[in-house]
Each structure stands twice: as C-alpha cells, then as structure tokens.
Length: 136
Image 1 (cartoon, rainbow, N blue to C red):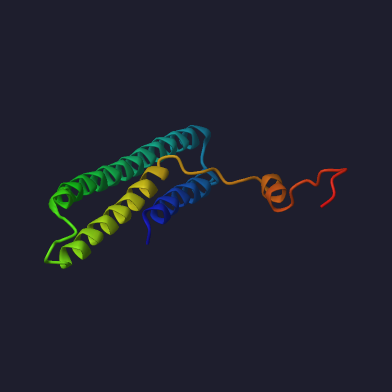
Image 2 (cartoon, one colour; image 1 turned 30 degrees about the horizontal axis):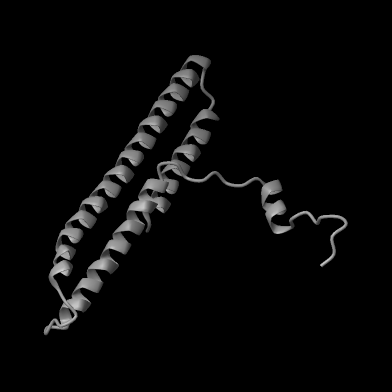
C-alpha cells in the first residue's frame, strides 16, 4: 500500500469518525468539547503525516547523495576499462537514483496534494469549447 493511500485512508477515517460522533445525541457543552477535541486530533494527525512525508523525502535525498558519491568513480573510468561490468553497476546506481527521486517526489506531493477538480472543470477538459468561425 502506498504512502499516499495510507495518508488518504487516515484522513478519511478521521472524517468518518467525526461525522459519526458529531451526530450523536449529546448536550451542547459535550458536543462542543468533542468537536474541539476532534479538530485538535485532526490537526495533530495532519502534522504527523506531513512530518512522516518530509522525513521520507529527506531520507531519499540522503540516499541519492550517497549514491552520487559512489558515482564519482565514473570520472576515473575510461572507455578502455577492462572490467566491463563496472558500466552495468554504474547504470544500476543511476536507476536507483531515479527510483529514490520518484519516491521522494511523491512524499513531497503528499504535503500539498492536488485538489480534486470540480465537475465543471472536468467537463471543460473533456469537451473544450469550440471556436466559432474556425474550420478544420
């Protein structure tokens, strides 16, 4: 399960919990206390998830930096290298950088996920307006 899926599921759970508890038959004072507690919990959970995503991105940045140190040996290798397997090893390091970069980018996107498009925006993208007076 991806981090983004877990984050989304956590926030959905908080929303469902809040919906059930705020509809409970409680007196006004208790309802206000519960509402405030749920807001605080939701805020703390969002901060925790953000901190986790930022930590993951930083960890992958450090991983990339370490791999770049290994790749610095590429400067000493020439096309006349006898051990040709070194080129495959270096290519794998580049692949690993790409993989780590994708994970770090996804973690950072979780900090400010794109907002879902409205139905009108979606319809506009699917059916762009036709310019009058123009023929194909």
